[in-house]
Amino acid sequence: MIDVHALPATEQIFTHIDPETGVNTTIAATSLSSHLRKIGYPIVRVPLTAWDAKVLREKRGIEKHRLARLTVLCTRYPLLILDWLDGHTHLIADGTHSYIWQQAHGYRDAIAWLVPIAIWQPFVVSGLPEISEEKILSSFSGIR
Image (tube, rainbow, N blue to C red; front, side, top):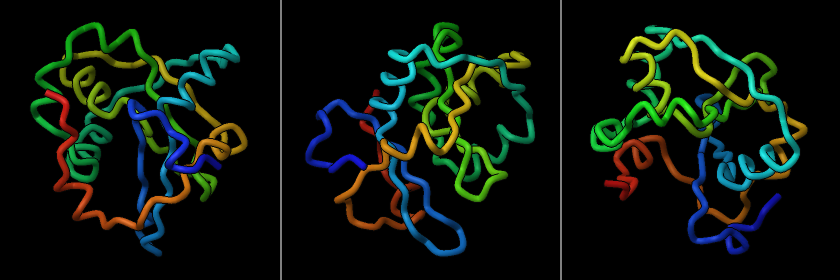
């Protein structure tokens, strides 16, 4: 676990709110991606589907200004996909906007890291207050 005060100011984080319990789990996505690159974790190809893109648009707070900034270069960066604690769900911890951009531009698949719990769990961030889904979805990333 990583204390929030130990994270660099440039760290991108991903927070998942359990739909049943409301419990927050926050992942240090930048640090996890750096670790995966360092250890040479394998990259795979994952399908991009219209159904998944629709769900992401509805549930993940897609910001139009971020989509507008993306170019074909986003296809070079792996999506960060986590095997989730329930054993059957996968969550995109980094690359949701890229997923939507690629799917909307006709790509059928994307490169990704599929990360098991044992690898991502040390990158859980502690010391943050609990936040609601409404608060996250109404937030602004600040990226223009």
